[in-house]
Image (cartoon, rainbow, N blue to C red):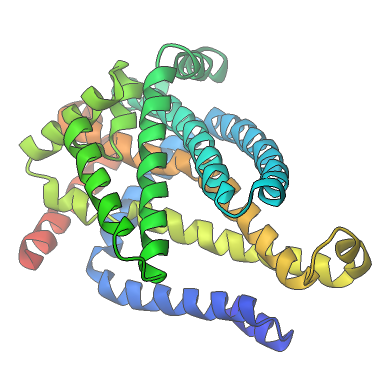
Length: 340
């Protein structure tokens, strides 16, 4: 809300709209999911405790984020050049290319996180150090499991690009192409099967292929009867809202830079330095934070899978966390059943 108010005071209406719409959506969403907030908060607290015991994960996340930032600069530079040479449709290929690379970087980090948190889950405080455990997991993610990661990332990139293009065509009232894209999406899902956010967990824990990992994750969660619980857990949405908030803050920093360094921004070819500065700052902040916070999201997904497979080991190695988790999950089961 404060970002929207600042944008209104500065007469930057794009920033104002983004801030006010974001705060409105957040308030409405919070009211809708109020009964599930305590469960999600406890899951996040356990995930943060697990990450705190493995701080090397954030060192790795900073390195991956730096790579992502460099690739973002390269992509933007190449995208501007290709757009000028070949027209608007090149934007689709540029977005797809960056999205795939971004997904690969995020999933490499998620697979490594799953391996480390899986060890923490099983052996407790005897988790290997950064030089032994995390280095081994990162090496495996970049070598043995890299094909599975790239395939899964490609799948998500194709699906997200097609969905975005379909929405754009619907908005432009194009009659036939959106239905054709719907058929393509249906074909992809029928051929590749069920792919979900827990696939990277099985890739990191057991080194499965991406499709086998997705099928195993779906089967384990279904056998435990946790379909409704997993469907309504809010961790991914919390991470997304945090990314939006960070993006708004960095966008505000970009707006300030554009306002005070107007001559530099104008000489670089920006038609509206303040608005363009806000947009660039928001984009950089959102994308970089999505890489950094993927550690927390992957930790939560790993804990859910490990709890589904072997809850007794968690109780033996982390009794205090296990007791709180058990009570939170029992409350969640009651809320989910009442909503169903």
